[in-house]
Length: 439
Image 1 (cartoon, rainbow, N blue to C red):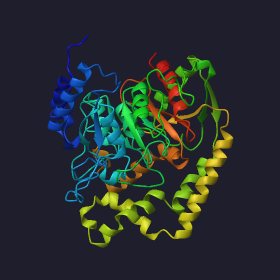
Image 2 (image 1 turned 30 degrees about the vertical axis):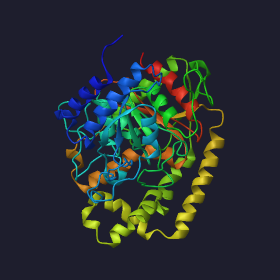
Image 3 (image 1 turned 120 degrees about the horizontal axis):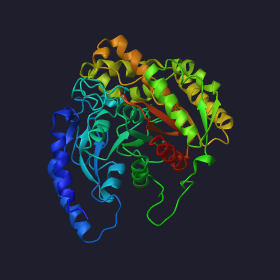
Image 4 (image 1 turned 135 degrees about the horizontal axis):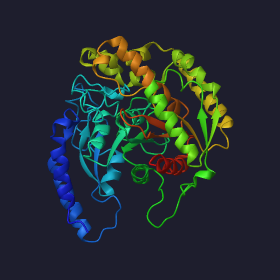
């Protein structure tokens, strides 16, 4: 048995946070609180506690409430906001499970970008690229970096249009976006009340599943409880996956295309049935988003008091440019958007009946260099491109997980997606797929 204590792990993690590679990763550090929590976890372990997550080190995205600290969501605008009176529900559940929280991680301001850039707190470098400054993806940028550097095994984040899965794909990690209704969002600063989802970034499907069971509103399979709602060990020969061949396959870079194709071939060799499918509903998404946009409308509603008070100059201009269209969206257009979404969910559900999951590249490109995002035009075009594929799942109110493809060089992610409420079954499918991809 290892003599390493949880407190030892905390000290090593704090050393990692201070390293050059972790520059700009954290917004709020809780060093002393983490040390005390590590000592408490060691005491519980000595007393025989069987909690499976006891002493697990985690980082928390900067949009989650932590008691006695202002919730800043990657913005200096809220630095002087009143401190939160209590932890977010998700954070409270992690503490109850015995997790040790190291602090809050950097993110795109107000979570409104898939690239992870932050002009206020800096942008952490993607650890997958040793000699290049590339974005780690966003908006959960620091969350992904904290896992990629091995500082923590799992990080808590949010996903409104890909903010868990994009950084996971860019950094070579696993990113799980559950169904939006699966985990309480109480105590999380919102971007879109319709699309926001709490999720996790880790190195394995098993770690994502373990954290999900702690975070979820309805208890999942714990030790000795057996599988719940379909999360059983699935043999590859029983899995049918639909390989989506339209919309999400547009403008895929050669690096991503080659890595993704290699992964699909491995899944087929491993015994999983891969069936080509077209979802014409997805081709309607660009026109639908031009009509109205959930994130723009709903974020503008939250930010309007600050903007009315003249706070616009304090925002990241690139984030503000995405919020402001919400001010001009007519109520009928927003109502039509809601109706179209429900119709599309029903149509896609009927079309994919009988499949265990859908499959496509998580992001059509590999992590871009920071230099390539210098102009606003390039930034916004790239941002829309990286959000396109993962945002499909949020719009369809589904669940999804990004797995790293077996490639050398720049990381490439593949996504498995399913309908709302199929989280456990999706995790079972993902566990089988990940085992095959490991070779």
